[in-house]
Every structure is written in C-alpha cells, then in structure tokens.
Amino acid sequence: MKVLHISTADLRHGAGIAAYRLHCGLRKKGIESKMIVAEKTSNDDDVVSLDANSKSTTTSIFRFFKNITELTLNTFWIQNKFSFFSNSLFSHPLIKEASIIHCHNLHWPFKNFPLKTIELGKSKPLVWTFHDMWPLTGHCYHSFNCNKWKSGCGKGCQLSTFIPLAWNSSHKQWLFKKSFYDKNPFQIITPSQWLANIAKETPLLKNHFVHHIPNIIDADLFTPSNKKELRNLYGFSEKDKIIFFSAGNINVPLKGLNLLLDILKNITFNSNIKLILAGNGHIPIRYNKNIRIRHFGKIKNAKKMCELYNLADITVVPSKAETFGNVVAESMACETPVVAFKVGGIPDIIDHKINGYLSEPEDKQSFLEGIEYFLFNDNIRFLAGKRAREKILQFFCEEKITSQHILLYKDMIKKRQE
Image (cartoon, rainbow, N blue to C red):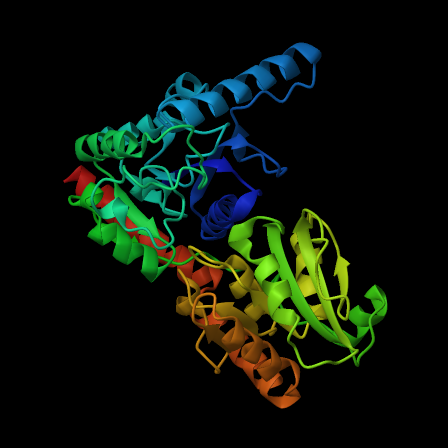
C-alpha cells in the first residue's frame, strides 16, 4: 500500500504536525508513506515541497508575487479556487504511484492547494481529514456561535474570521464547495467527535462517510521528566507555582491570552505564581503585575515544548475554539494536568476533575477555580497528572491511531477495487 498525504505544511501549524506524525507512524508500520506539501520545514526525504527552494532573487520575487496573488484572490474571490500549485500537483508522479490519497489542510491565505484537489478521488480512493471547520462553512475555520453553515452561510457572516473576506461572498463560497463535494467521491476523517457531529449534520456532505479518528500524540517524546532538574536549568525554584500557556501566536484572540490575564487578576495572591508563555507575539501591555511572566517566544522543536510542559505545574487552554487540542493532549502526556474551556474536541481528551478541569466557555470564575484546584493542591495535581498520561496512552498513542487509519485505507482500497 502506498499512501500519499497532501498538506499545506509538514511541521508547521497543528494540522501540518498532525499530518506529519501520521506519515511517520505509517512508515513505522511498514507502509510506504509520502507527503506533498506547499511548505516544507522537515529534512524528511519522503516529504516533497511544490514551492521552489531556490533562494535566488528571481525566485524570491516570483514567490512573493505568487503569495500576494493567492492572498488577494482568497480575500476578494472564491477561496481555494485557484492555486499556483495546481498543475504541478496533478501531474506529479507521486499521484500516479499512490494507492490512496489522504488530504489534510488544503486551505491557507496563500501557499494553498485548490479545492479541486479532491477531484483526485475520481481515480484514486481519497480521504480528507478536516482539521477545522473551513471545509464545512462559507469561509470560517471556526463558526463559534454561528450556525449559518447549516443553511448556506450568507447574510450576517463573520467576514473577519480566518480566512477573512473583503466582501460577503460566503454563500457563494458555500455553494461552490457543495458543487465540488456533490461531484466527487471521498470520505472524511475528523480528529474530534464534536467535528464529526457537525460534518454529519451539514447539508454539504450528505453522501460522504465520516469517521472519527483522533490525532496522534507521540507519548515517547512527550513524556514526564525531572521537574527539579528542569527548574534549575531554567532558573525557577521548586516552590514556584508555574502556569503554562502556549499558542502558535499568543496574541490571536481565539487563543484567549487576554481572557487568561483577566482571570489571573483575581487569583489568590501567592508570590510564587509564575506564568510562562510560548509562541510568536508579545506580552500584552496591560496585565497583572503581581504575577511574573516569562515569554519563551516561538518554540522550534518538540523537545523544548516537552521541557516547558514538564516545567509547569499546570497548562491552561482558554481557547474559544479548538478542533482537537494538541497542546491539551501533549501536556497530559507529560503528566501536567490541563485547565481548559469545554469547547470543540477538548472534552474528548479531558475528563473533568479526573485528569484535568473543564469550564463552561468563557466562564472566568469557573476557570479560575480550576487553576486554583490544581495549583494549590499538590496531591490532587499529582494524581490527575498520572491519570492524564494514562488517558493519552490508552486513546491517542501512535500505535492505536495509525492502526485505525490503516484499517480505513484498506477498506477504501478494497471497495474501490470491487
């Protein structure tokens, strides 16, 4: 069996990382797995980038032109209708060699793959993992409290939501997606039960099978380590009460840093409380000066992330939406319990007060209670951490998730051959 993954990235963003982990897990199982990506950051020879690697001035200028063109079209026209990668993708020899094609994130403001990529499903079995809601809406990657995706989007659509629109073409884009979905055979994977339920409910996908298979968490990499040694290494004391917050960009409103800082204004005073941050962006000017904040910036490797999870007493995820919750699961694999809002796929991972703490969305008081529940109760926190790793090993380990994908691939290939 030859599996080909198509993804905007391999080791960037949660979706790219999830796709790459699956690619690696399949190879460990003896499956011939390859990836075609728009942007490659790994050194993996089995990952092929369609973007020019040359650093020449001419290439750089052309790349800039391509990015600006795609960004403009995705803002003012139909998103993902056009891509400079179309011809090179459809004619690529890996497409012809593949037994099955597995699409991941196809959309991005630029360096995206066209929606017509799913036309490959006419000649090969094709499965598409939805890593957010974009395939199900007129343009939003998360609809939040809006349910217009059920009826075609349109009037009242949130234009500023990623990927943003210059004018309200959301209904037109919804219809464009429906026309493509209706004409092309493919099956769907979602990493959370929450997204699976939405995919089954939308009128866009009436004739497509939906499967719930979580993302892989590398429990050999994300594993507990010596907290005392790490604190000595990073200049913290054993008495410190450390709260960890991580996001690709800490200033993205969706991730909830400002909300967290508001919550921490009311925390029971303790001079040992420290907040550590990881991700692009900057510390907001207005925050509780009684709490020391240390910003580690962008974390470029998983080993460093693992150290930060282990450095902390708890990880907090005040996100307004999460399709799966990689940070949640990675922290739990390190035996660091998580306090989070009950949104998206997070309830699939956290069992309230057993291996973490779930608050109702944007309930500041409940979230604060969750932080204090673990931060000031060492025995409860220790036991929750042990249970957290047990949950990851049981439901999200590489062996289990990879095997579920292989079974689906084999079934799809068999049915196509019948």
